[in-house]
Image (cartoon, rainbow, N blue to C red):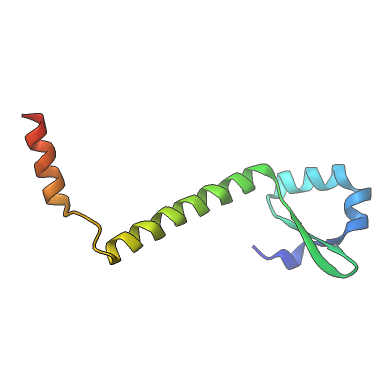
Length: 89
């Protein structure tokens, strides 16, 4: 995702809101909004935002799992499955 392809001033956002909503929903590409020449906002469609949030949540879980493994806070899968087998019988 290159934000540099969709950079618009805030005045464009104000005057073309409906068009921007349509374009972002169709393209699913975020738009960078500038104010006085400085990047201020990223505007994106809801589906892309939700997917990004889900991806971040998954990455956080993976990082937590890796940290627990590094700290020795885990059990061998064989032990877990053996314990589950005992519980079933």
